[in-house]
Image (cartoon, rainbow, N blue to C red):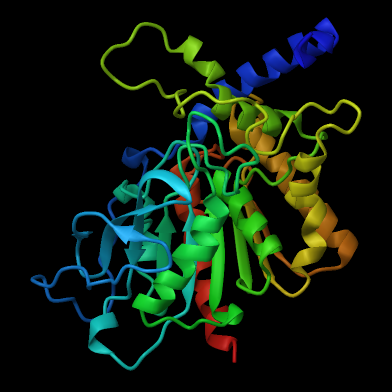
Amino acid sequence: MTPARLLPARLRRARTAVAALAACLLLLAAPAAAAVPPPAPAAGPAPDPAAGPPPLADGFGLTQVGTATGSATNFVITVTTPQVAGEHTVRILLPADYARHPDQRYPVLYFLHGASDNPIDPALAYPALTAAQSMITVIPDGGLRGWYTDWLDQGTAAGAQNWETFHLGQVVPFVDANLRTRTDRAHRAVGGLSMGGFGALHYAQDRPDLFGQVLTMSGANDLSADEMIIRGAVVATLTNVGTVLCGPSDGHPCGFDFGPTVSSDAIFGTPYPVFNADWRWNAADPASRMALLAHTGIAVYTGNGNGSPADMEFWAEGTAKRVRDRLNALQLPYHYVDYGDGSAWGPDCHGGHTPGCWAQDLVDYVPRLEAAFAAAP
């Protein structure tokens, strides 16, 4: 008899309902390029229009495929690695005067995208990031549903899925070896939105030696059994349960298809809280691990989804509040913004799980981060 048949029928029905609801919500988590205005021109000296991306040397297990695309200051490379199956893009944003100051080194922000996105999307180069003049931004591929961790099950149809090793063990040293970076933790930050908000907290907590600043925007900040909707969202990306809602194909890919269907247990083991079988989910829960960020600058942004459970931001706000409450209990400093319905947070933000709000989050955050970098010894 399979483990699923041992579960009470009520629990089986509940977990199916949660996964289906989460699949519906997750469609709202994907950034839409049309919702973000084109990047604003960077201030300062304009780069040579004839100059292309700088040459980067392979290393640290990364092999570049083809040639880089883009400009000298906003370009994408494609790499392969044994750690993660397939080809993966990495977008790199350099200050406008990077080439004109060959003796200057820069701090780095690693910016992690949400579910179902890819750094090839130019909308991920948010205006506040492209306008930054004193730091480098690196946007690595996190997969459609990689969830910024090394999966427990490496034998699924998705192939190798060691995302944390790829990013922290390969991309970070690759960037440091190829670009003029400041390599101490005080000059390195990690941030992200939605799925990437979880990834940012997860990486900063796992490797406080690497990151001195962390940002989570509308993040999946709580994986505990207290937030089964967020767990259900993760499970929905693995099992593709939402594809039944797509209907007949109209020639466009289904927004609920996150790649090869795998088991709900593939990343952290079973997500179902029965006899502590879900202990790996609890161990990875960012909200319960905030003490690990005692010496890290912390920023949290959220809206309220206009109070609608149909908007993923409604649930993201709950996780943000739990992070805030935990930080208060620990008496740790942090920067927290809940912009509610977005009415005072810019014309393109209406409180939902959307790029218009994230763009404004970065308008507020990037100057703060640059100031923190500048103040660090």
